[in-house]
Structure formats: structure tokens, C-alpha cells
Length: 108
Image (cartoon, rainbow, N blue to C red; front, side, top):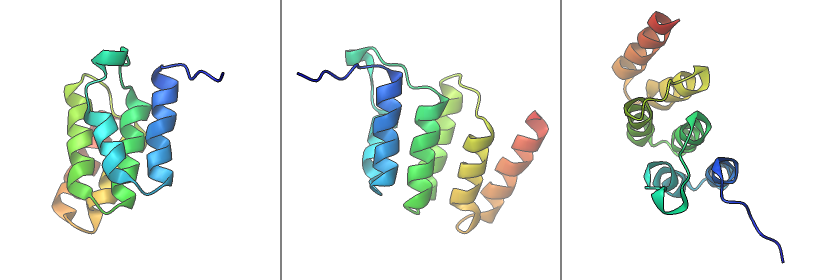
């Protein structure tokens, strides 16, 4: 019998698989859902994978929601976080994209 370990790595792989399957809705649900039942705390990779999935699904507003949620969860966005969030909204809301880019530069 094959058993899958329930940890942040397997959780991140699942969110990443949602991106690969173009299932941004599932990636969003996984990133923002409560994982208390299985004691998994999402990390930057979890949120980045969900941001990328939303970006590829042209869901810029959801990508920004995840980005904001990540910051509220006391996780420090990295280069991938910023670049994916900027890319997700660049064609839809250039003002927000510019603001995010400025914020990223100031944090450096």
C-alpha cells in the first residue's frame, strides 16, 4: 500500500499540479483553505504556486488576493511572488502592477 505523507512538500506539489492542469480554482482553494485539520502550514512556495496558477488562468484579482493573504500570514514574498503578481495584473491593471513593482524595489 502506497501512503502519501501529509506535509508541506506534498501540499505544494498538489498546488503545483493544479497549475499544470490549468486548474487555478483548485490551486486558489488549496492555498486559502484552512489546513488545520491536517496540520500543514502553507509556505511561500505554496502561495507562489497558487499565484502562478491564477496568473496563467488570467485571474489577476485572485493572484493579488493570494499575494495579500501571504503577507497577512507573516510570510515574506520573494522574487517569484512579486514577479508573478506583477505579471498577473500587468495587462489588466497596470497601476497595481506598477505599485507592486515599486514595492518590490523598495524592499530590496
